[in-house]
Length: 614
Image (tube, rainbow, N blue to C red):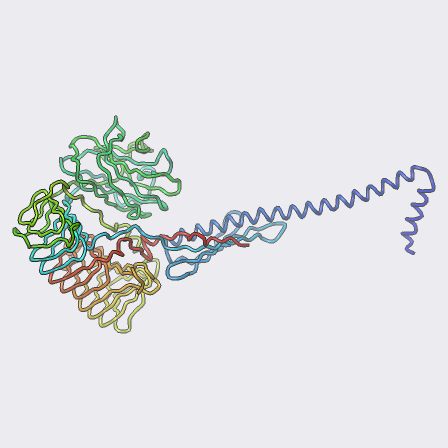
């Protein structure tokens, strides 16, 4: 027998054989032992609960880091579609972000948050989601859309679609427009009122810009002005940028009410949010043609939108405009001075600069407009035109129908792409490969993009250029001799962009095609102002002949010449010449062009793909 146990038994028996006090002591020892066991259990449970509680808190923090990682990934993808992820050390922990391709244009994002835990292993939570490119509101509503330079077509040319011109539509010698034709009065080439110095703004501070749309009290921006001539307001430009994805703005011209914007809206138009980028750029808004404003009378331009602390606009500002002042507030509510006071927004006002016409011959049958009763001709003057629908004009001669004067004068139409949109595409291309020197694509073919080529690009000799991303060429682009430009199959039903800063020449059986999926087209865009630019030597911004195929041409600063049996999907330019039997067939799929990258390539999370895991 264990001597210690024997001694303990003897001790207990001794207690029991003495007095009642021994039983008391025995009871106390037993109770103490029970309390010790219970206390030990409670302490163990408390420690376990504390560890569990710490882990739960840490896991919650890890989940917050992971969710922040998803938001970060979407933001970076909208800055560059090449973003593949990163590891970020943040207060309280770390998040690891990875991005991979998923299908033609989707991105699969995984963000894992890690939070150190002193009493247990690091807490980990992961979030997975799919981001896709949302639809752009950049829209090509007309087969031909022309700026102030106007549109000239002759020699049997045909437009299978509609034309909207902010200048004349000079159509003679039996040319045909199968849809409607609208010729708005062009804007003056110079501003009537402007506040635009200095530009660009190198840094946005409280004295060089004004945020609006952040709260109800700062929802709208207003600028007062006075025009100098009794002419129609044609358009107004704003030097503006956006943060995140605010909605469209309503541009109102309103009365003055004791030094603040009134509630009498004289005219209004929409500033499309898709034309505004995250960097300052001039964005033009066209206005209705009536009514006329009084010279010397004070009016207000109100940029009226909604409010959101993370999705808002910023307008460039200074204190130099002498014919008005800026205000911040809300339309039909209260207004206050900008902070600091005395700031004026950057804007330019253009008045009407002339009267446009459709046609050109003195006798009927010079040009044909429309094939149905809804295909109208609409301009200040229509002459020498056979129109299927209404002949909406103020004056006219040599037409098959008398003028219907009830519609007034058509307003100018905003161009579908802004300079800021084009810069976004350029930035997307520059984030990829940068190649210095001229590039020629021959029989071997080439797959390129996203890429910036500092030089000229030539596709000839049966060469095939396959675009896998946006391509930006700082020089000229020539596609000739059976050369082909097409989009990679990864574009699916999206559009792609090839952008040049110099003249573009397309001839000799050159062809363009999409990815093979319905609705996919390449857009060939140039920022060239040729032939007006010095050094153009008579070249056009785009000179196209010889069957271009499924391509949309954009030269909003220059002139496009189309000739020699060309077949296009759409063309937009400041000025267009169409001759030599050329034809254009408008494709309605361009109404909502969905670009793979650039301004239309905004990534958003796909509902139902957001999954949280350990």
